[in-house]
Each structure stands twice: as C-alpha cells, then as structure tokens.
Length: 230
Image 1 (cartoon, rainbow, N blue to C red):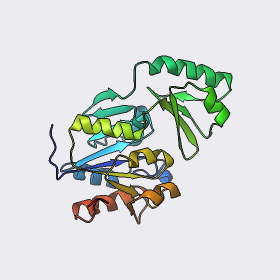
Image 2 (tube, helix red, strand yellow):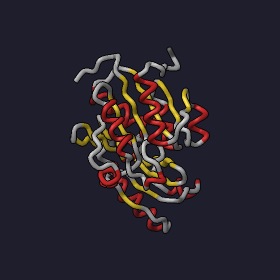
Image 3 (cartoon, rainbow, N blue to C red):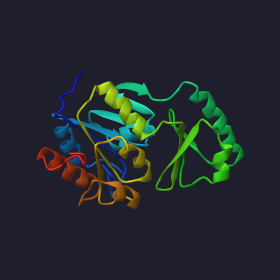
Image 4 (cartoon, rainbow, N blue to C red):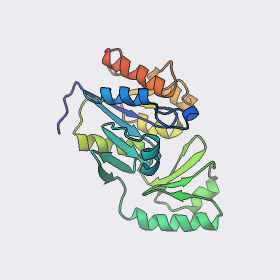
C-alpha cells in the first residue's frame, strides 16, 4: 500500500492524551467516532506503553489505522502483529527478571516489555541490569525494553509497513513521548501534558486528552496545522 503524499499520519499516545484519567482511561465514544472518521481519509495510529490485552478492554471496538503498543515493541496493522524487538531479547529478559527479583523490585511482563509501576530506579539499580536493556519513564512508572526500542523506533517501523511518505504529526503528554517527538514533522502537546513535552511542542492544544485530539483533527482538516519546517 503506497500512500498519497498529501495524507497525514497522526501518531497519538493513549493514556492522558486520547483517553482521560477521570474516565478510568476508557475511550469516549465521541473521540472514538471522530478518530475513525478522520482515519477514513488519513492515518491515525495509537502509540502507547500499554499491553494489547488492556487496550482491548479500554478501547473495545476502536479501529484506528494501527496500534504501536508496549512502548514501540509491538505493531498491529489490520490485525497482523509485528514484533519490533530482537529475538535475543527474550533470553536476556529472563536474566533481567531474575535480577529484579534479587533486588526485591516488583515487576510485570508484557509480551516484550517489563513494567515497574510507581517506582523510579536508582543509578545503582539500573547499572545492575542487563546492558542490552533501556529504561524509560512515564509519570513515575518505569518500562524496560531492548536497547533502541521505543516509541520512535515503533513509529519508524510502522511507516515502513504503511509505506507512508506524508506529514507525520505526533501528539502526547508524558516523558515517554519525547522519543516519539524526535521522528515526527509536527510536535503537539495536549493541554495536560508535562512541561518537558510542552517545551518542545510546535503546538500546545487548548483542550486536554480526547477533547484535545478532536481539536487537533479539526485543525488538520481545516489546513490550520503546518510543519515547523514549512
């Protein structure tokens, strides 16, 4: 599938960007409908640190163009799954899990990712982990992934799959969206984004969460959103 250059790919975080915490992170039906209508003529991918099993609950029936989950490690397009991680990672992940147990650090496993909730790791703890492991944070939660696997690498892989050559717009709220912002043409922050995202954004929306996403899609369709390089 070769895309038209005048189409837009929006890559959006999920928690506190697409879905509101006050709604328990369940996706609002109005936002769902607005995004799906946008994706009929453009492209919209959800890029999240969450596992698919949880997304399937929180966004039941939602059909964007693609999902990039586990912070870039898993990509789903039309139901087909692509693993964005080296095969050797799964052996190394066992070693990392054993180390975390020895350090009495609670964790949980996704298909690729290791989650550590409500805890930042010290420099000493990070140095004790496998050298093939990267650590990223999102509002106090730690995520452990293979070196070089993050939202940016997931988005680049998705663009390869879609053969996409148009304008890419990234929208997010948290620290783990910083890598994503490195590989998009237009950086967008929802109103409730943390300061480090707002500081680098080309556009800071006037609304939070899903209301902000709808504001962004209106801007795109009205031709009001321009690349910083334009």
